[in-house]
Amino acid sequence: MEVTKQSRTRLRLQNYAFVVLFLAVIGLLAWLSHRYNFEADWTATGRNVLSEASKKVLERMEGPVSVTAFATESELIPTRKRIRETLARYQRIKQDIELSFVNPQTDPQRTRELGIKVDGELVIEYNGRSEHVQNLTEETLTNALQRLMRSGERNVVFITGHGERAPSGTERFDLGAFTRHLETKGIKVSAVNLAEARAIPDNTAVLVIASPQVAYLAGEVQLVRDYLRAGGNLLWLHEPGNTHGLDAVARDLGVSFVPGVIVDPTTQMLGIANPSLALVTGYPEHPISSDFHLMTLYPQSVGVRHDTSVGWNGAPFLQTARGSWSETGPMRGVVELDPANDTLGPLTIGLALSRELNEDAAASDGQSDAGDPAEEKASSDDQVRKQRVVILGDGDFLSNTYLGNQGNQDMGHNIVNWLSHDDSFIAIPAKTAPDTQLSIDEATWSVVGLFFLIVLPLLLLASGVVIWWRRRKR
Image 1 (cartoon, rainbow, N blue to C red):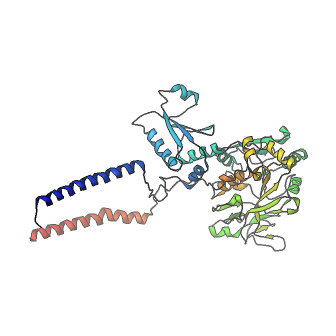
Image 2 (image 1 turned 90 degrees about the vertical axis):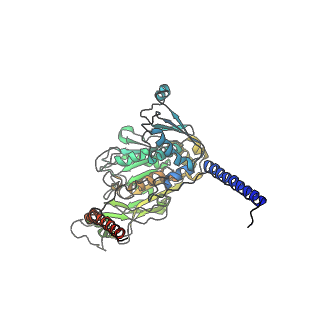
C-alpha cells in the first residue's frame, strides 16, 4: 500500500478518533460505576449479605427509617466504618434508611438526653417509635426493626401460684430462656397470681397456663372461663396426668386428653434411648407451621382430642409419627404396644382452636387486647373478630432444658405470634451463625504435615537438581 499524505491524515484522524472514543468509554464506565453498582457474595454461607429473615422484615416495612449512630471519630477504632458496612446491607434492600452520625464527645447533652451508654450505640426511629441497639449485629438490628414494626405491645401473662413453670426462672423446669427470647422480639412477659390479684390484667394479649402441679381453686377457674368467654387468647401447656381442676375449662374448649404418655419408637433410630421422647418432622397445614421445616422434640407428651360440637374450630399442627402410641403401662424396661389398653398414633400434640366472636365478645376482646387502638380500627375482621387458643400436650419442649433442641424455640415463637395475631412474623426463623471452624481428623493432619514437611521440599529439591543438570549439559 502506497503511503501518501492523505493516507497519513486519515490514519492520524483514526488514531485521534480511537483515543477520543476510548476515553469516552472509560468515562462512561466510570459514571456507570458511580451511579450503579453490582455486588455478589461468593461465601458458602452468604455471610456478607442479609439473610432471608432480614429481607422479609425490610420488605414489610413501609415508610422511612432513621438511624442515628453515636460513635466517636477515630482512625484507630473503626466503629463508624463497621456501622456503615452493616447498614449498607440494609440500605441495598430498603433505600429509605437514613444513617447519620453524632460524636458523643462534641455533643454530650444529646448523648445524655437519649441515654447513650456505649460508643457505637444506635438509635433507630420508625413511625414515631425508637429502639436502641448497643451490640450491632444483623440479629440485634433485625430484632429491633421487628419490635418497631409492632404497632402496640403484646403482653403475654403467665399464671403462677400452682407450681407452674416460672416464666423468668433459671431451673431446668422453667421457661426463662424462652421468655427472654420473646422479649427480644418485642413481646412483654409478666406473671399474675389469680388468688392475690383476683383478676386477669386487661391488657393481656395471651394468657398462659404453664404445666400446673396443684389444683386451681374454683374462683380461679371461673376467672379463666370468664376470660375465654370475653374473647381472650389462651396457651395451655398440659402434662400427662390430671388437669388440676381445669376440667371445666377443657369442657368449654371441647378438649380432652388421651390417657398415658406418648411413646415414639422412631427416636431409637437416632440413638435416643428414652422412648418417651417424641419427634415431629412433618407438620399439618396451618399458619403456625407454615414454611416450618425444622424437627421438634417433645419429652413426656400427651395426646389431645377435640370435640367440634362445642363451637370451636380445631386444627392439629403437631402430630406424632404413625408408629407412635400412648402408653398407659409403666415406662420401664422394654415398652411395647398393648392394643387393648394403649392408643395407637399418630396422635395430636398441638391443637389450635379458633372461633368468631359475636359483637359483645369482640368488644370485650378489644379491651383485653394490648394492641394499639388505631391498629385495631384498621385491622381486618380476621384479627378483631377471631379468638385463638392453643392446647399443647407438652410443656417441657419450651423449658430451659429442651429449648435449644432443633426447632423448639422457633415453634414456641410461632405459637405466641399466632395467638397474638402477629401472623406476618411467623415465617421468620432465628438466624444461625455460620461455621467458623475447620474440623480435620488426626489422620488427615498427618497426611497434610507429611506433604508440606517432606514431600513438597523433596519435589522442590528434585526440580532444582533437574534444572541444574540440564544447564550443565548445554
